[in-house]
Structure formats: structure tokens, C-alpha cells
Length: 258
Image (cartoon, rainbow, N blue to C red; front, side, top):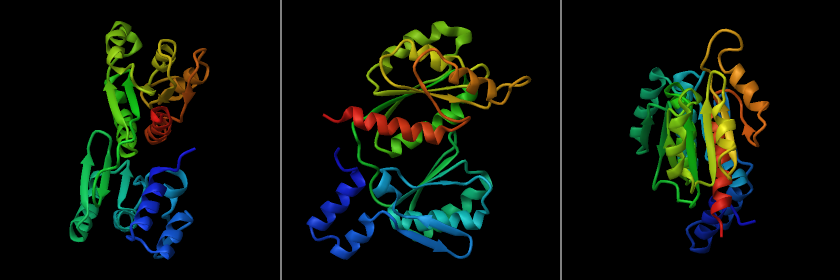
């Protein structure tokens, strides 16, 4: 199996004299930890170990703590993705990033802030299709989309194709058939991933979304429906756009390899 891109980049830097043997060895071990005050211990080797970008969950974090964690990650790894970020958390991070010369890009629909130094992630050749049943599912779909893009994939989207108007699905699928994997987000009864999995010959990842009310509302019915599907698909947790996007990117990168 070929080395992940982060490891390949490190080896190239060492080969061309841009990185000392000691620095390369420290990075390659993939077990680098860095403590921040008495509130955080961050993992700086995830990209080398797992081929995944560093992602920080903003939900529930103090804005000042979050800013320090995100900036430290961006400085060490060159890039940091902050998910589920709220309005009050954005400005402290952006202010610190500006002072450090780190670019910031806010994706409002997916509630993601990306910090970066240098070029965007190298393209892997992988193609991910992201589909939603309704417009209420777009916030989760956009999280999956951005994560997959940050892992070097091309992402093609088609939104609002749910089972209540299933005739919308068939023409929308045609431009997506070149994808290596499909991410399908659906709330309420969560039917769409099963339908898509019965129509395409590629892996399908179902994402239940916390849309719906009453009995088994807030995504529980969608999760149960996807788990009980007679179609072949994988299912992630409710609203787990990050997990779906990262898993899809891994599949797509493998599918793009010659």
C-alpha cells in the first residue's frame, strides 16, 4: 500500500535537504504531543499516522482556549480545520491567525473554519458525491464536503432529492456516476441512502440527520432505517458529517489509485 501523502512530503523534504534527519524522524514517528497550558494536549502526528487532517471540534470549547488550540495546530501542521464553530468563536481565532500570518476561510453552510499556511491540499484524484434528501440536511452535507475537499478529493453535490419527490433523484445521479463513493444525508425516515445504494455500483455512506419530530425524531428514525436497510451501505452516527467526509475521502483516494 503506498505511503500517505503527508509521509511522502516529509520524505521529499528530507531528500532535498529541507528537513534535518532529526526533524524528519520526530515528525514520522506520528506520536507527537503538545500540551497547551493545563487545558489541552494536542496530537500533532495524526496526519502522518492516519492520513487525516487535524480537525478540532469547536462545540463546547471556550473561545480563548479554542483559538490557542487551533493556532498551535496550524503552526505545527500547516493546516487546521475547526468544525461546529459558532459566531462568538470565530473572531478570536481569525484575529490571532491574522497576527501570525495564517489564512482563514469560513464556510458558513458547514459551520467550518479552515486555517492554513501555504498551498491547499494536493489533489488525490478521488471523487466524492454528496447528496441530501432535503435542504435541512445541507448543513451536515457541507461538513462532509469540506472535509473530503481538505483531504484532496473533488466533491460533486446534488441537494434536495428526497423520497417525497423521488423523480428528482434520477436525473441528478447522472453527473455523479463517476464518483468513487457516495455520501447520502437524510433526516426524518432516512430513506434516500437505501434507494441510492440500490441504484449505484459504488460504496454508499448513509448519514442520518437530526431532522424530524415526534416519535423517534431528531434523527433516531433515520438512523434506525439506515441500519435496517436491505441495500448494502455503511452508516455513521447522527449528524456525523466529519466522519462521513473523512471515510469517503479515504475510499475515493484508494479508488483513484492506478
